[in-house]
Length: 470
Image (cartoon, rainbow, N blue to C red; front, side, top):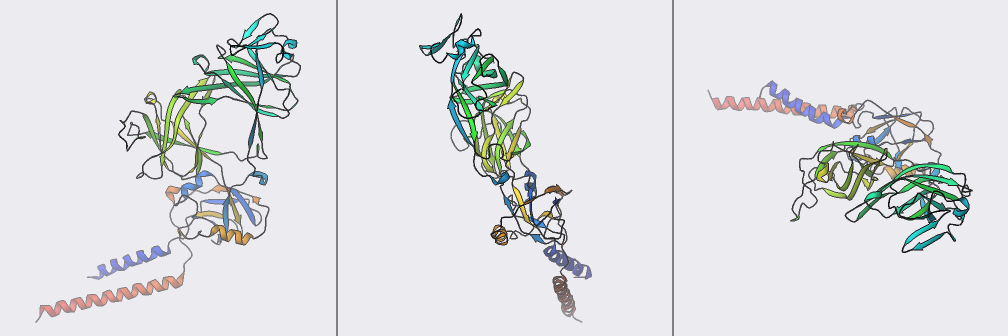
């Protein structure tokens, strides 16, 4: 072994040991801006999860200017401290199909002497014509007996091919002479394989005692329309209009290699063709809902959504049902987002019927309710967020935070996060302040190894010389 070999071995030991003193934290990712006071609260957006190695933000640390870790915790906060849930109260309303020439005096008496029911059909007699529910021109809705506000109306009707989609106008009056428009809406009901999908709500804020009657005009889909129920809905609860909105983000996909359904992977059921796409998230944010953005592709058929946390696992079915994306008038109507209960999975698969095979690649739209980061600050700003390389750093974070806070219920000062230039792909470890005691220990150890190697080389040469003989 020559001097070059000794140098290489020593260098190997140096590199191996120096890794033990590589950065404890990643470079700063976010900076807390306009932080004032000791108790600081900042909103967290979904993209911060792309930096977390464990996917749960347990490796996130808050540092002051001296690289000291500050106590922190994550909380779900509703503004003003309100925590009550929304409740929907529903009242069934009396309604009547009416001919266009009905006089106000006639309308006022619809619920008594002017309406009859024969063979399940409602007939309303007006000044000079009789109108049954096959050809309604509009409906009068009686809200005079309600003792609360209305937030929306729910409309149900018997669906047939002619009126799966309705365009309506809602008006209101106090005297049945002067009508005030409350707006237009597009409604739909689609039945597929015994499943019914509805978009049958008209959002309209109507205050108690402002009006006595509503008029529902059918602008499209009136042919053979049979409305079966109209209900008034009121949202109650302190958080009805104060709950934090969901933050949404879109994930693009690609055409899947396997265009056969994976729904029965372990059964004897014959595989059947589908139009399939697969998606990969670059973060592990606990998403509450997922929606499907089909763009301007018209669709109304079955859909399946699968997910898994890594590519070695089997797919888990998250949703099976009907998906629609249709143009009603000049407005696109689509299925509501699907609840997925704080799902962290990174890999997703969408299967539609083969009729969608030529569609452009759809997007998945994930959403979650943003959380808040609470920090007990020091007097050494600026404060930054980074990721710890020590997995055990935050094992007792909640307990430590609660112990420091004690019985206090402080007023949290609002601040904002500014993302710095570092990206998940470009993160490199940064050096920590030098611990000279540790360095001296390892240098001494390396010198000892070098001395041993030197003696080994000399001994090897002596043995080789003795073996050669005189």
